[in-house]
Length: 187
Image 1: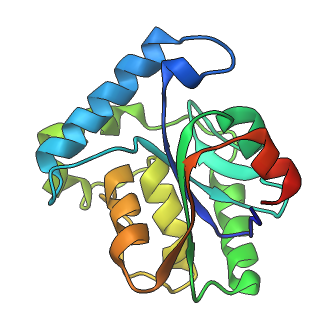
Image 2: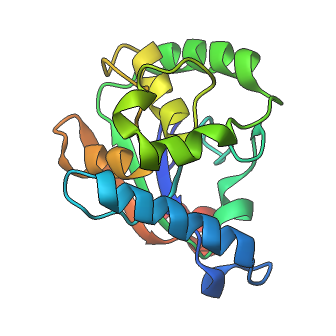
Image 3: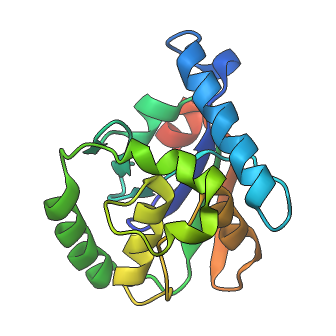
């Protein structure tokens, strides 16, 4: 599999496929996010609970976990279910300008966890609230800064996955369990 800067990844946590062993807190958080998305999502289906952006060909990411930070996709998500998509009109120059600005603004800052319950309780209100983006909003903010979408606030992981699957400007690069072999072989 060939990753490119600007590729979008959707994932969800699975205790059975965690190489570091089961993490009950992570499983409960994923279940809560998935349930909230199912209640408010247009199609009522939500598989993915986290999204992030690929920032280079080696699989480096920029994402919001407990802080905004970078890590390697293979190290962090090996064995997990992923959906990787690419916007067909992503220009690498625009991506790097967006990445520089967003990294400078958010890197190392704390995750806005207070927003998560609002996605369940008042999802329509989210797009009007100021503040730092959650994972899926950050992912779409990259596309927004590149002029590829007209919004980013209020976007959920399920919305991002639906965009990859259904919008004509996206293509699916890969969907399935992420293995080391795929990352090492480039297959």
